[in-house]
Image (tube, rainbow, N blue to C red; front, side, top):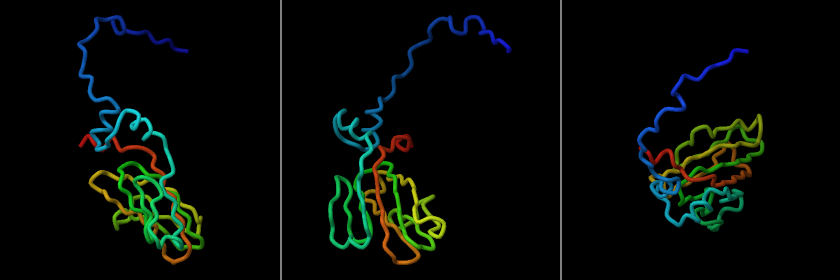
Length: 158
């Protein structure tokens, strides 16, 4: 086994100047458009179910949780963040998710291989209010479960 030596002064040299502290995680969360206390920030980091939609039962608007409204064949989102979408379409040729009417990236699934699909959807402040819809090639019973995973922080650095 080869032994590596540490160059002299590498770990023992003089301390450099203190750098910029930058924003805290809470500060980045606020800069991304969120509002609330530090407790709200920590609560926002805990994944929680946000919406579950069975298309056959979606005719009447029902508010499932803060930030999501189920109406007709779609979920309407009013809070930015990363959402995990679990889809089920029995016997479909293919199915996919749309975000504000356009196909969401990496959310098209082959229903003949599996009736289940799992995708992530990023909803930015400028996307709000956002409509998420599960579209299929056949109009059979479809189920969509959305779960808010956390805030979008990297995109705020634009």
